[in-house]
Amino acid sequence: MTTLIGIVGGFLGGWIASHLTGGGVTGFNLMSFVWAVIGSLILLLIYRLIFHRSHA
Image (tube, rainbow, N blue to C red; front, side, top):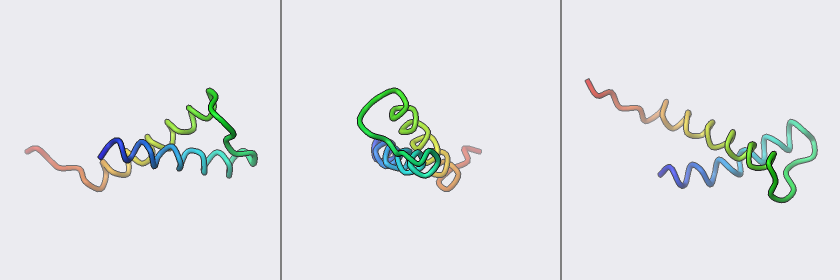
């Protein structure tokens, strides 16, 4: 599941970058990698908030 979150998060990061910077992501470079990580972290956080299971 986390692999899928990472892949979709990369697309989300590109979408966020294109809306915040106006230029989008073109090719692979450090900033495109950073935006992909940001998008993945956002999705992972949302996933953990929705599907968090308490181990009490």
